[in-house]
Length: 246
Length: 340
Image 1 (cartoon, rainbow over the protein chains, first blue to last red):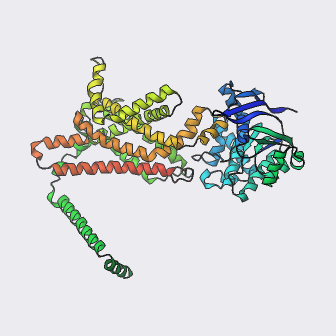
Image 2: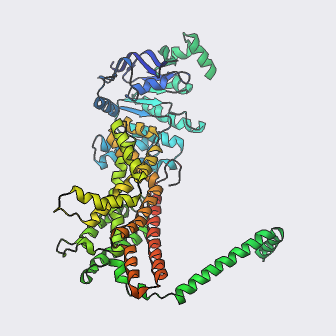
Image 3: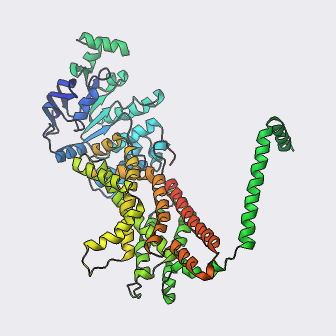
């Protein structure tokens, strides 16, 4: 078993004394789905944003796919890591001036220097996999939230990433749109993709997660396999959280 | 019938309104009637009609006049084509690709046609004038001001203090100085710094001064566009492995410039109108032609005709520019639910 992400004692402070990450240790094994849960402001978004260098850590050791991402990391290394780690945001963040197809082919063509034909073929097959192949020529503003988020997933997958990070991918969606995005993510998990997912979707976590990490005020409170986590949580804080959102 | 009844009822309930409306309608009618009857009957348009080539080309050698005239006609034709042909992306991609290059090629084409070279005889910039000079000044300085303005805007929003402060200083100084002063500086000071033999083209000097001035305003318009792009767009680009430069070029600037189009159109129209200041510096552009004509004793008392004619021409050019800008704006997709 390969370890895709190794985080040892990482800390991150905002401003003078707000500890966003406080001595966090977590290993993500290749092919597993790790779900990160916790109340808002608990540092879960900050944690996964460190995994592709969107946030710099202050101290500790962070190793993603064999490359060190600490505060002395070379920006070019960070850029290289980002081609191997896909990310999907809460607010989709599609490029509104580009068509769906151009959104997806942008990075393969500009970063990996693929030929247009090749990149477009890949984009079409990804859109088909996401169930939105008829939207290729449209623009983001013409799509529903759920469709936009699936485009965002396709855009991240176009670079053939080894790890996918999801930062609350369904939190900005209408309830009836949540399912279509979760279904796409479930398919991805079944294909063996290494995934780190920040989410409040208990059903998804229960069904898809291999392991669940529970965080509060920058600390890891509990880390367990999904079954144990939902049935016999060890910590009082975890049980309280689960009761509240159930 | 129904409208009539509604009108009568309205008049009964709002008598003051009605009196005012009638008064305004009468006033408009009177002004229209007076203007039309002046244009048709009282005005003597011979001063304009006998000098049409002069208005178009200034004192360009008469046997070479076809050159500036050709350029003006090409510009007019291109404007019409751009306005008429639909350039919705996707449906008419070919036109959307070719037209911008046609526009860009109009600049070297205009310069060669006006100045000579490539087998055409040389015509010194002293002889350039009229509409062709006005348009050349506008187009060239706008094309120089845009990239310089974008660089200034990027400098202004840069993280490097040196870059940020020097850009801001430049923008603040340029905006605090009146254009006419910049133009006089360009005319009087630049030659002092250069060796005696090197006489740069008078038009080029004007273009550079205009561009340096306009760039400060362009920079602020572009900065407005840059600020409208959320940080998350840069993040999304970074996450895909795009370098900061690629992110700027492919994601941020295309959106920022689209947002800045209405403000940039203002600048372009202002630039066209400001070229009339060159008449004070001795370049005989459109307004200069008018002034020269009126200095001739034969046309004493024809001021109104000449200025109405000039006004109509400027109106035509500015309207064309506004329409072009609207066309460009509408040719792209909607950004984030804003109507573009």
